[in-house]
Image 1: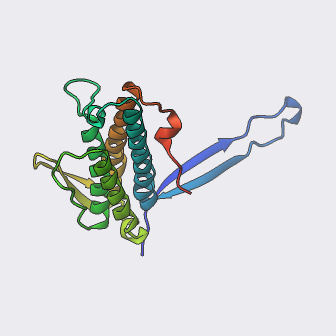
Image 2: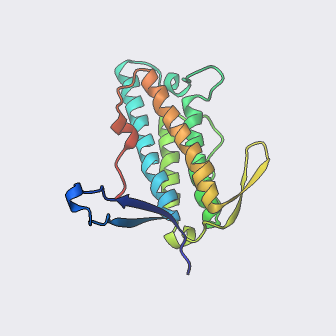
Image 3: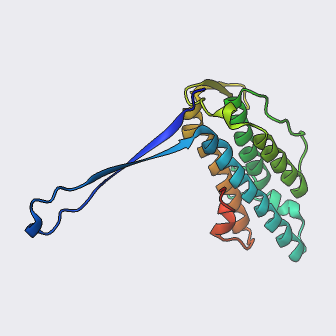
Length: 203
């Protein structure tokens, strides 16, 4: 079984010493860090979907404390022509599950076509996390050069390798939507700080 990794090389060259030690030869050390395709997909998506679910908990607490309808927060947006909070949560979920499903060669979970409330959104996130947790590392590792096709909502398609799907499309899309969801809630006055966005790092 071949496992593909993203390889990152760090080169450190020690500083030149005092001139009195002119015969000193600088040391050159190379440290190689490997990150698997599974870590780069399931590992990342799972952590930040967990924090996204926690952000929705903060939203629910905020709405209850201020006696406002939670749908006001779910329909909030940063600008009239941008997605609302509900759509950003849904898109983050969608990019995570589709990317992992494409890499693993399985069908992604389907979510009901209804207008969700906060408990519904949290349930969908939990389903996405459970789906990704059911994928074995062996199903995703080794897919860096795998040809995959992403289908957009309008039916158009774009081809990627597994690695380019993650690094140039799915992960950036995912973080765009998670970040904007955080920003909408923060803009609406929900008491959040950066650690709420980061969540609990996976060990």
